[in-house]
Image 1 (cartoon, helix red, strand yellow):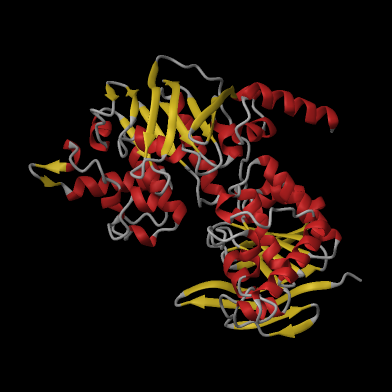
Image 2: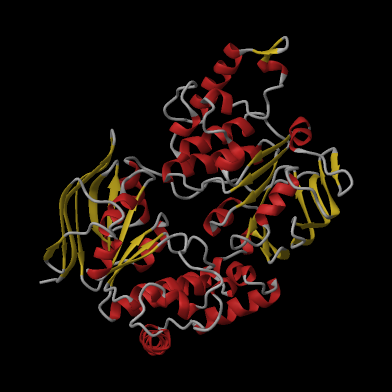
Length: 520
């Protein structure tokens, strides 16, 4: 009989009128890797927050290793042998690895004795699980893959036998993801139980033993991973069939309409974020920018959109040429057929207190079609918003609803509709499906390809490598604010792009990838 690590029985949790979890039950076998998937708002994060003590359930029961426990806070969870690695790391950058792991878990009144004991225990954990990190290095100087290892070490150092990982691969290269999976396999081999929250079905299929699916705050299905597939899991998550493969005709590029010429950008502190960037985008093609988050992609998109001024070089967008002396602005870009879907919709894409119809004209409110004399024509604005909501399946289809009341996916669809319905010559789109449900991802991808087929030039920035590879006709890889190389979509694979994302030039990455495949 399989030994149980965690059992949740009829867990319910409400936040005011919102029922986040409704009678949710879950059993996780000891020493297994168990995936939990679901759309945004399905209740999976709330469920894990209850297990880790961030929230208390309104009703239901938690059993750890067969015994009922009360988990009122994270201290109770740690006492029960539960650890959690959050999507956004909880580390102190100026501290060393050793100091971060010890913090709050010192073994005695003398720091020197605690430090020696911690070093000995961490070296043991490193050997046992292959979690090698430089203990005396400052955490802020480590790459994100090693920072994640520090978070896992923190949990294990505190005695975790059950480890929850929330979207652990969001900021990792494919190679770092492979390394993480090897670590998870080593943890499993030593009897540690891993609960993996992710929206990436490919990863669920690659690493988990069982997977549980949530929808609308309820647990709708459990599957042995070996007995299911991505298509079935997507249908269970959404409640309907979802097409995971993108239909795309061969590219037929026309004239170059966007080009960067030795483009550079330094921030207010004088730190160079973009260095000597050169590329072109043609009408009728999608060019994807791949890279680990924080390597200049965000700054590039904001310079192109007119939000940030270039420090050197120039960029040409249709009839506009932006230079340090004449950088232009976002309004100028919009007037010349350049649309921008920002990476951070809350910071740059909408105003939460505005109604949906106001968000739907944000930045375009001076268009003649929205005006009646000097005043905004509310009837015209509402009619246009209603059409956008129909065409882009924005739910609920209520133009008067406050923008902050929509789910993240529906906010994203409203912003996409606003920018794409203008039939721009150039579409700058950042993280188009960040925080978006799998059903909406399918729709958004189709709309982006439709823009390309209608003759628009599309520049796509995404940290989702599968998304970049699926949508793009050409892929540019960035690392450290520089372009490392360019790859035609038909030649691209995740391993080679992952190597380039670490700064390895294209030819070396291709040779290293070929060698790795031969070795395999």
